[in-house]
Length: 137
Ligand code: HEC
Image (cartoon, rainbow, N blue to C red):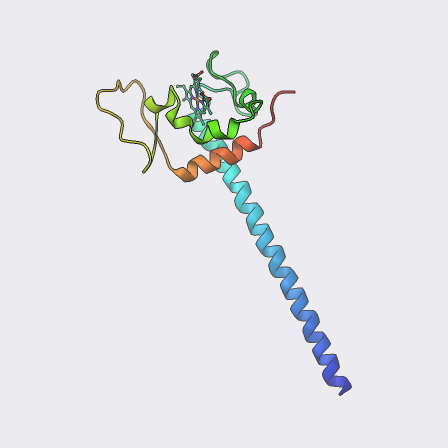
């Protein structure tokens, strides 16, 4: 009698430890995934956007003068919306194509630079990275 109670409580303890461990693992994997999305977003931005935009931590003295910096855009309440649809806002339609979303670039458009092709997942990663940028103080 006493012994079986003892076994049961050990069993309960082991189950509790295993459950805790599983939760920690799942939470850890979620964080790692979020972090790698931010890293991917950062490298996409370095590759495709830093030519024109100033991005904090990437090219403080780069970019093209008249192009809004990413941190300045974080001042705007609707920055997220703007980044979600930036590829339809000028001048980007001439540069960027989102796979499965945008129409193929019209052959009559001047090919003054090579086309940037990205996926919707890339857009998500960029959004996650821009989310970490603070507006200038
Ligand atoms: C060839 C230069 C160039 C490149 C490359 C470029 N942009 Fe831009 N972007 C601009 C200019 C110029 C503006 C300002 C347009 C205006 O004032 O109407 C702008 C504006 C924006 C805006 C604000 C749009 C609005 O009208 O509110 C966002 C968001 C943006 N860019 C995101 C991006 C992202 C993300 C990338 C990289 C994937 C990128 N841009 C690459 C030139 C560029």
